[in-house]
Image (cartoon, rainbow, N blue to C red; front, side, top):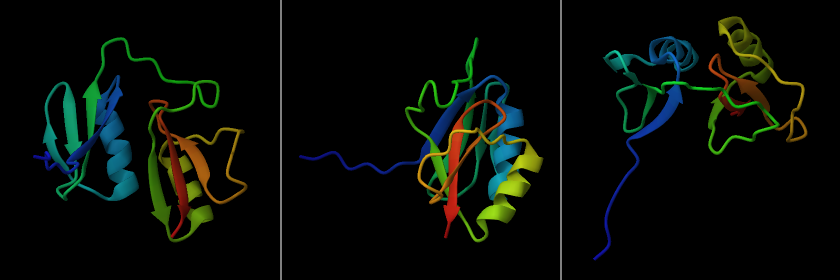
Length: 118
């Protein structure tokens, strides 16, 4: 007998779940569907983004400590999306693998994520 499962959420640990959820709400245009003092959920589709408070959270240092997991987003216009995400609070590290096929950005809590053209 095989267990049948489907992913329901990607959860990112962070120091400030509400602030990080707001950043990704602006990135995805999603809606916050749950919020309490320690966690926030974003989106009402089959896969949510969730943000959970981690006491003593320390951001990883890209690329010195590569991500164990990261988010990928497709965008219609790579240059315009990069500019908008930087205004929202993302940063762009100097190290950019992929030979221009995607752009690595860092969210306000230090999680790397990638954007690529749709």
